[in-house]
Image (cartoon, rainbow, N blue to C red; front, side, top):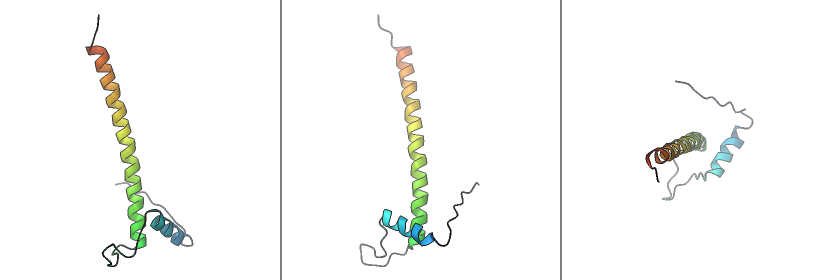
Length: 83
C-alpha cells in the first residue's frame, strides 16, 4: 500500500493543528459537557483524511456523471429516430 507523508516542521505544528481545529470547529468539551476524547492533533489528522476522501469522491462522482451523460446522449441519438 502506498503512503502519503506530510512533513510539518515542529516549529509550525501547533499552528497547523490549531488551524484545522478552528476551521473544523474542534471543541475540547462535547455538547454533553464531557471531555472530548479526541485530541486536537487526532482531530486535525482525521479532518485532513476526510478532506482527501471528499476531494476524491467528488472528482469520481463528477467523472461518473459525465460518463453516464455521454452514454445516455449517445443512446438517445442512436435509438431514437424521427421522420
